[in-house]
Length: 117
Figure 1: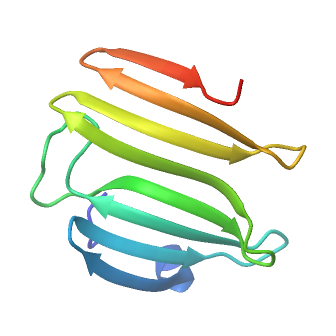
Figure 2 (figure 1 turned 60 degrees about the vertical axis):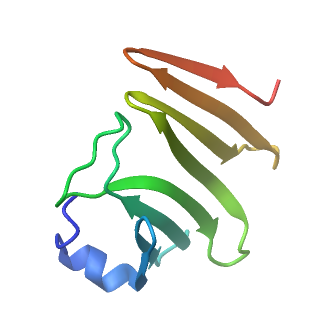
Figure 3 (figure 1 turned 180 degrees about the vertical axis):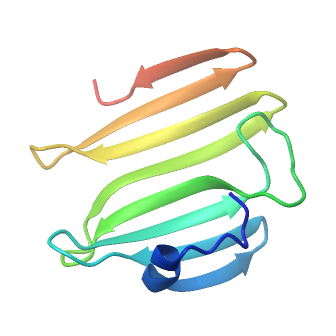
């Protein structure tokens, strides 16, 4: 995503934007029947460990229910080396408990590990 890309829908839901050491942090808020707050961090490092000077990638995000401030889902990505990355995905299930999974990417192979079982 180019950081200067600002469609009207993004501008109208953007609450704040700030520079952080590794990139940019944006907080978005949606309206409607299911209002959500999205807290995302963007950095120049992609999941392959490549750095691009003009483009940013989502490195982590958290989605909250705006009314209850409850975490609904999150993604945290860590690039551990060239062509290696780990992502931790957390999702609230229908029983009100969190399902956690880890996605490990090593060169060309991708492994998904279910951490809740």
